[in-house]
Image 1 (tube, rainbow, N blue to C red):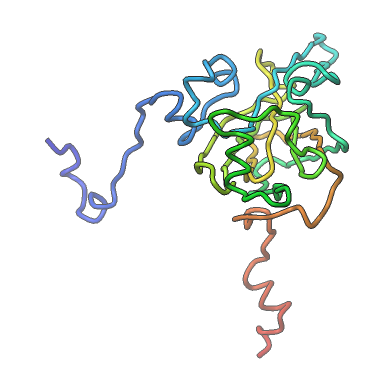
Image 2: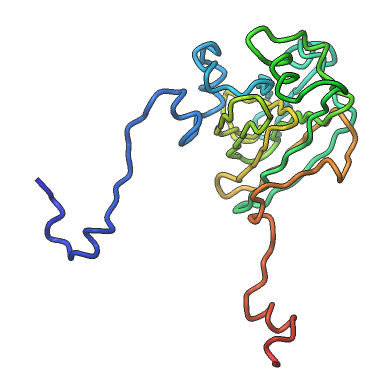
Length: 245
């Protein structure tokens, strides 16, 4: 029975409805998105076919003082996830994103040793029998390690490395000020496109480290029009002089 028969034909033809079926964690990871808390609680093996190789989550502890503020730990040299990865940034920076804004997609070029084919190299590093992390050329390519002090974000990751399956990960991260009980940082390899979108009405403050120092030539952009502040067409026409033609 069609319950929409009382609508006018054009409206009936244009009608759609949202699918409220939850789906599995793996299905939601590459579609509507999941929370970091869900990812940290999950058995990583169950997500093996959807997880991007080299991406890692870094569990964090945030300590709150009522009426005063909060203190959040991130990483300690040689300990935890980054210690196991042998990864320690050479440069740290911060960024602020106003509510209603987004960044990306950004991507950094992977380093391929001389004499190696990219697909074979990535299979060597991340394939069924991955190489020790000590073989990752952190000093020659930019890996990002980031966390969020304030505000909530939606993060999207896309694996664009030759020879690896193109996978998408979409998840939500709460800032230290959110009051949530689960906090995490993210490790992003080069060759993985990444984008951020502010979720909610609060500005976001992000802190991030990179394994190499900032190099404009290593900052690639894909589908990043969301970052460009386009002027109203009338303004642009006036600036171009076409409105006086």
